[in-house]
Image (cartoon, rainbow, N blue to C red; front, top):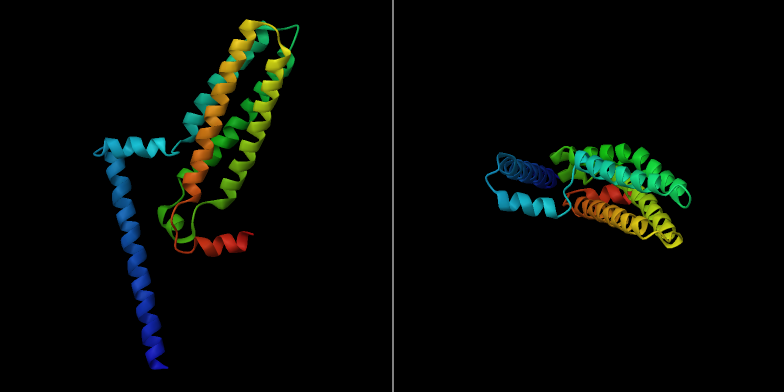
Length: 191
């Protein structure tokens, strides 16, 4: 019995030491990114799905402005429907940006131990589905119009929205694939 207690105590101490050293290494790595000493690694991190809420707000604000300009130039045809999509996007941009910021600002040790913020990842995933529906709506509207100027403008806006959706999907994949000690256990209880 004493041998088992000593063995369990030793395993517990080793686990705590491992967690502390991994968290310390991650903190040092994040500090290195923050100081800008490794610009190449920083750029690589940005390309692998790292976005923040402010970037999303800016991208969607520009997108909404472009859609509203397109809607204003086509009062007879699809203008009102385009304006409805722009309004929906404008209303959801702050929610999505806040979710992205919550995921980015999650405590590193907490993420290391129990995994990413699965609740917010799920909400972000549902927003991307809504985003896909809006893209489909815009593509249907693109087929309805005969005005080449509006078609060109709408195609550019659709491409912008698809790129943003792709960035968010990469962000989700990056955060879901983060290593954690007990993330498998959290996922088991979330199902």
